[in-house]
Length: 72
Image 1 (tube, rainbow, N blue to C red):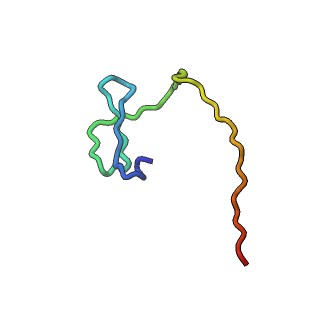
Image 2: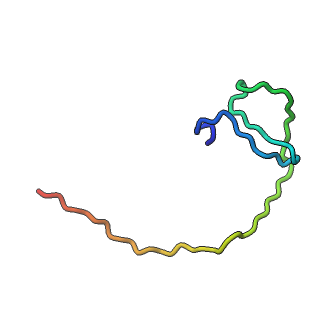
């Protein structure tokens, strides 16, 4: 998605520390790696809460398509 939009890399806040950032470089030849350490995700926890009023889609009446007959 980002690469297709023309980005060479993206940076986002790391969950491993307050001062840390993660960098994704789409072409590793575009960067000089000075320090790097691979990590493996061993556990993942997801939590969520409702943040607004619920809404429901109502069924709309279907309109008949308007078709014009071709003149002969």
